Image (cartoon, rainbow, N blue to C red):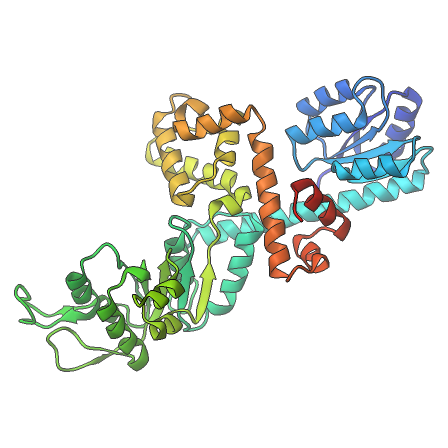
Length: 449
């Protein structure tokens, strides 16, 4: 991490000078402000890592300054100091997101240690983010997989254990979450990467044609079969077969597929001999297969063969932190293909993109960005280039949409962590990378019981 940038705010000049001298002696780049109003303007102009502010000041006090800074940067690290040291003021400051609290008159060594701890926290956060981005870029060379969210990082951590094996994988999740891209990633990082990756959408092909496509046929098997044809199952020998929308596969074909998985052999339509096949099967669905089993439209024995390793891909609304990165990725992609020089999006447009719920997930985001790139006349995408459904949400939110979206992200992550750790708050806090006090504070702020 480069030299940390610190903004110190206090209405007493002597205190400002003392803190400036102390922090500069520690190697920090220090700026000072005599009021909350001045500090806010400086924060808008600069890029500070830590803000150290007095709690009680004339005009804009420290708590108000914290709220205004958080509107600009929700993850801002703000440290309070006050001679009015009461439990109530400390609790209130921490409730509103203070990183820590120093009591006046402060002890120099206490200030030094507090800043060293906060800087270390920032350093670890930067390293973690850099590692995730590097990993996302590495994975993106296989198939366009871009993410920084913990939810997707955990998903790929799980996949790492199954990718080297022959085990079948079932990908579940809403439409548009990227199941096809993940299926390709599984193949191209597996020992089968040098063999074929065969993909077919079971819902896009009529039943009769789907059977001949999968199993192949012998000449004369039916009208129009003028020559032998290998099926996709055979073509995927020693490679990977990806069956998308497996939930829409007709029941008779389910039985035939199960036989292939059990025996390792495939028999073409009209043929009398079987052929040995060694395939790794990855399937995907946005349907509830267990429900379909109860309804009698999906075979239970096939489900167990498909779901040796089942992975649920989270919808985009549950990993909102990925949206800006994905938007930037699609801007570069579609700018290049349309020979345009779009450098990014306006702040207003970015707020709209982040706050939208994306029912169509990554696929919908991709389509929206492609449309915006085509419509853009300048070097940045503005609100005018976005669909009406995104603009309406921002206008009704009146500037608070980004904050609401970030709150939704926090709420979803906390609820998921608590559920995964069977309501053990301490374990959930550790998984989230925060302490137990911070978890309880966030739960209260977000209305989580």
